[in-house]
Length: 157
Length: 135
Image (cartoon, rainbow over all chains, first blue to last red; front, side):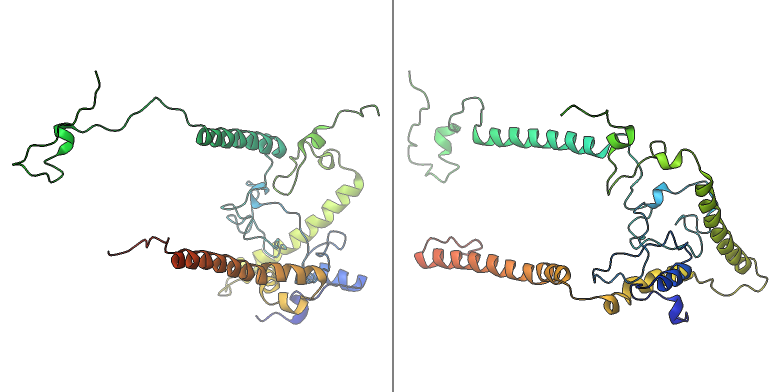
């Protein structure tokens, strides 16, 4: 792009002057600017913004880009494309997360255990082998029509 | 040890990576001190300056063909072209790289080898039933 090198992201800032310059470059206050930790993961001097999705931004404010709820020049989150309104939502839930997780896991584990027990110890009404009419389907199975079929009885008296 | 005071509503909520604390429970949003107001005023000044720049370009009688957003360009550059120059092999990155790049290859090698060996043994013993046999 046509931007000069000092307007593009660069390496991790080491001195306070570099931090101030980076904060100015990203249009942030020096106190607000916090880069990602220098772990060699490739973030450079990109600011670490709070992990909040766009669902949490004010829907009634006059954003420059209303669908993205983003103003011109405002620093974008590293995972901006994950936090758009079609995707991940981090807005607060009516029920705390750990409560939801606990209820879900209890239900899921109960259902799985019951299904597993049902597989190991099946219970159904007593069944017998299937009985076919017409002398065990003698003609349908290709028996000779001229010969006498063998008599098949399925009962005992 | 005696039980401490009951947890506050914010502590009982336990926000994490997936949900954030609602503003009603966050003590930082309650009373504004003069310090907080000064900070907010500074942020508002930056926001207003950027908005003015954008509106000037937008309402220009001869508007440019496209109004570039430097924040968007920086974001795209940081995620694509700034990763390799700022990458550094550390113990953590080397371990993760080995885990995600070499690990699956070794895993699938092992899986396929054991599966094929098992099938080969069954065929040698004559116990393998051909699944799509025409005979």
